[in-house]
Image 1 (cartoon, helix red, strand yellow):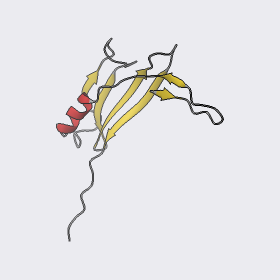
Image 2 (tube, rainbow, N blue to C red):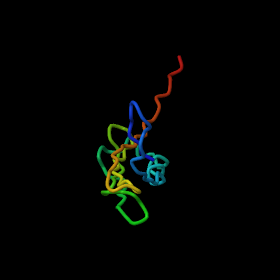
Image 3 (spheres, one colour):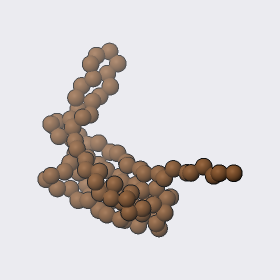
Image 4 (tube, one colour):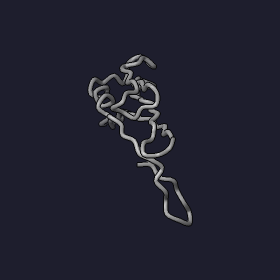
Length: 96
């Protein structure tokens, strides 16, 4: 759910959207992090069963798994939400 931020009154609902993070988590499990940069692992297309406004690609960038997403908001006249999912592996502390 997306809301605006009002200083002196209640925040107003701006719409809602859903995302399926399963394709992103599949990329994490396959450990594509560290693969060649900007190689597309998977492309998810807009469809009636998702809120994607444009195609969304999962790729490796600087050792991180990245997915840029533009969602079309539902239950509102119009509106889109842009977000980016990033999976960054944690650095393990070296033992001395």
